Length: 519
Ligand code: XMP
Image 1 (cartoon, rainbow, N blue to C red):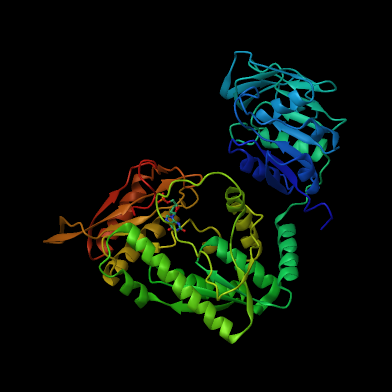
Image 2: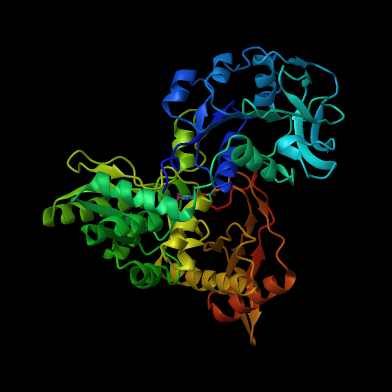
């Protein structure tokens, strides 16, 4: 590992939600990156010793009231700068170029024209190619020392560069998939104009994290709660790689897991990592606490509360047995960026996560994924040899099947839903659809019955709902158009194999208005 591998490229966030995506794209070019707010001063930026700075997209006009500006001193620091969209205009303005309201707005797919001499950013790219634009104002004159290297109908200066000073910028959004050559342009800025060596690789991430964890924990002991999901599984495996069996994992079986999930953790995950695991069987306790409860929010609160109690008891037991000072958590980079600013969103559903710790349980947190995006976490997991079933797992809610039984949660109903869910998952996997769908909740309408006919007899059974969704981030979602043959197989098998079920229905609602989970 070289000394530059953890110096970041800083993406200055002008508040248009593109900054995190840009940071991911920078990392895809194998260069470490971090997001900083546009309120960061030049000296705060320099304190981070950046390899380069990317100014992101933002509000539509640099002339808008309170539009954030770029401190011209930034350009005297010797650090390479790349401006994107709003950042491009702010850069042009700070360096003495002209930005005007030309009246020709461009939104969406636009053709970019690249002259024969495309400069360092665009050379050898097609003379005309599509890019994604979103601007009202346009740069009409590049600052002194800059060459204009691309134009479009609405943007006389659609890209410029000054390779001498290692500055460049583009009016369009290179970070989105609708700009097919965008990643190549970003890569050229980073590697060729800024001269940064691509060193941020999965194995460098792994080495660096292991070193850091060892520094933090020393010869201490750590506890990690496993949920069966990707984040806690990778966080624990990293810590295990660093400190071996001074890490103990706790897995709470609340009885609301899907078929085979406990075995995946107890058998496959342990076999792959050699991790020391304590399973707490709390199935009875959760069933008892949920008896008679039908309200979704009440269910969520009960499951969250019981989970924390069980987990804390496990922590106390471990503390009594050894000196555990550290608690491992699978916090990811987007959580870190998002909790650093911005107003909270409305509370649609109370999500349960292991929250604040009680006073008598004092732990120092170890968060080895704090710098990573989800796709990087998956790659680290694969590099650590974790089973594919865990690394590529689709999201599954903490309250588990408890919020997929509409009505009271009972042992029989859980068994019914578990069977139906296992069939749906098996068929989706066999059809090769796992990567295409974001997740597919299977829901039991336990308080609904409908008439059916099976064999020679009349039945009066429950419906099962299939809820396959496509999504980028679960904030919005669309229902996935699954092939009819796959739906047919799932439906036939569920109605044949699951005793209490005589009907399978498909949820064709997007989010909004419907949430992904039914409760
Ligand atoms: P909704 O139903 O709000 O779900 O559209 C959005 C995403 O969040 C997952 N989800 C949860 N995840 N604890 C979790 O860890 C929860 O309580 C919870 N509730 C919903 C859901 O599966 C989807 O991916």
